[in-house]
Length: 473
Image (cartoon, rainbow, N blue to C red):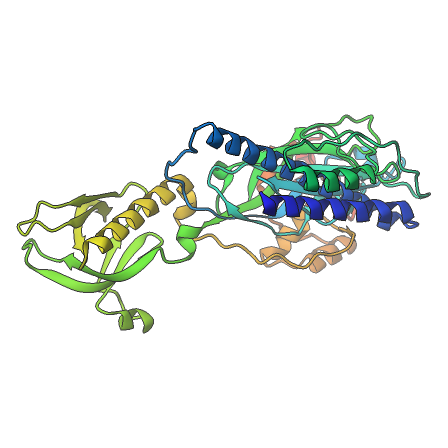
């Protein structure tokens, strides 16, 4: 509880600083960043308050005699979201003909997993973009397999004539009395010194911010372990605004990202030590080996030195989500041993091992049981060790040029620079990789004029068809 209170006080101080910075901003970019920091701090404060309330409830139940559940809990792990792309669907008159008022918005994503909240960099969006691209790699640590990762997209309409706005009226404090008298006074005093200029809601249309740079919720979605897989995947977005809102953007209704996970049981060895393995039907014949339980295998080396020198193991025992582990004492000499029933090359196989002391038997049995349970809870995340890139350093406000089609096309070995050059010269562009969510698009983005030249230079992709077979819908 004391650690959570310290985090809460830190976030309150950071919120005070963001409020003061916002009041002193004279540049539009500064106000956008300060308002974004203010919104993020408010979200973290609400999450920490919710955590403190749960801790308070657990303490009360313990006092009245109800013990917390002692069920086996799975290991935690890392969850990372990267390469987030959100397609836009501009009107034909806005994107192709470049007509109408230039609508610009500053957007970013807020990601919450449990009490941990992180945000992306700000991206400026207008009608020259076909996708909102976030290059951040967001990593959450100590995540349970039953996690819910909420992704929220926020937008603020950017006005060219910026002037600092006066902060609005103060809101009442949200703090309860479960923090203790001393800490509660400090947090309430800090909150009363900062102005709340928006309604706080856990899933509503907006979060508190500045009247000069106000962010509103555009769309959101919730990701779980079922959405984790290798590569990119498309997810549906729930839209939270309408076209008549000033912060509105023409979202297609989907987002594309890579969601990966690394359970702790897949990152580091679970247990290691001297064991004895039965390699024949005769119970009197046991082989002394050095065992290492790692990922989906129990590796048996002749000695610890063989492990350090990376020699081939003497025996590899598969450990999977459906592996059965039990302790038996029915051998002729009445000593305990562990039976591991699993599948190898399609056949049911049972391995038998024991240790030199009964205490070690209990340690190995507990470790094996826990490891199988961990893999059963993390499901497909334990099939292979997924790669998680190291988060890059944070950047300032960026303006993305081009689109997701050009970026993914360059990743497949075709340079986006050559692509843009080919478009400028009205030559046939190279084929580009189309992301998964484009399979749902029903828009033809090709028009050929009488001179058979490309009509527009900034199309995300071009498909060459015979002139008499082109159909516009």
